[in-house]
Length: 368
Image 1 (spheres, helix red, strand yellow):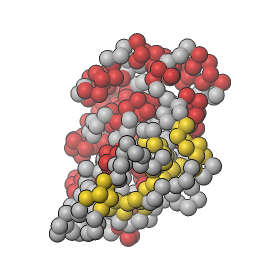
Image 2: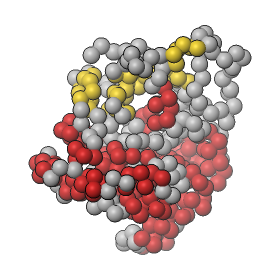
Image 3: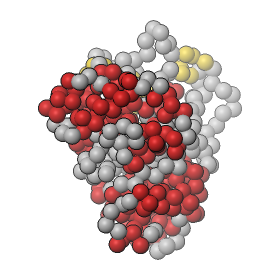
Image 4: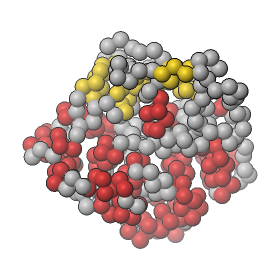
């Protein structure tokens, strides 16, 4: 398939860094090529993304179709891009007549760009010395707002797993049960399979042959449960956090951590803090030393850790924790500790976009 034209939208790296956001274990559908471009799937479309200091550039495959035409409209008069630290990441258009790509709003929604990171980073740095120490080296980390069904089944695959293996499993789900979208750079991209497609009795055995192990049963039985309770998906989406988590934990293979990942990354519950091995280690090392003697995370300890972060960082605690989480991953930990040492417990100013380096999180970091 021939490529479409490159489009772009303004987005400074302090508001989003693709090399962090797409590689830190939120989504498992993205791959970075040798040219530094990210390839992935959102819904039933494949995207190619690349980034400069001030813009995200993208291509869509397949491109705009006859039923989704690009719209030409005059640019707003006297609009200038603010240089304030509180500048939002919202869409702006050039001074010349602009072409509004219908897929732009899809990207905007997926990356939750209605939320500006700069004022959040400032507030979190003022509230927490550890955050202030690592934030200058870990700018632009935001939570994705992904499709609920895809996030649900992807994180069922995450049990006792690492990022690389989860990516492989999700890829197998899509290539065996999804629909082909296109081929790019020798890789075929597929849509995520429907719940009905995963609910078949034969799926358990097929997935075991594909290397899913015990997760095969969790995936098939969860899909079967949802097909037998057609109201369940809508109930979860509309529920408050406590109810949504309880409903999610009705499914086989969905415990507290997996349920919290789904709530944070697809249902818009921004204060949720999934407690995995990384978050437990961060908390014990930097915040609650009493946890160092604990051998297992009981429900009481799990909830205590979540409440600690919500009290410290407020209603967007899940977003704040993702910065600390990324800094703790093996690929970045040395960088984070170096940054913390240079601060000597003093507050540091936010770095400029030009000074922020982009790196790729190691695929061997465990997400459990």
